[in-house]
Length: 88
Image (cartoon, rainbow, N blue to C red; front, side, top):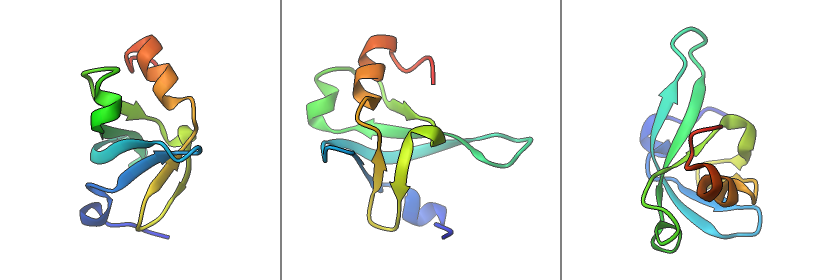
């Protein structure tokens, strides 16, 4: 399935355990392979209390994505808090 940017932008992002992380606000694309390198997530209010930075999610952390939502592995937030999203 292909999803256009206008449908991907603001798509809600949830963990496997159904915790809402926020919404996709941007992506980073690898200019050589033309593939998505990172999804940039604007944190929800609950997650924002843990960190002031956006959450960076690599494609390997994505379990599923469709026109309604993105589902990612549960440890995304734990990794974010521990490493401040510098290592993905």
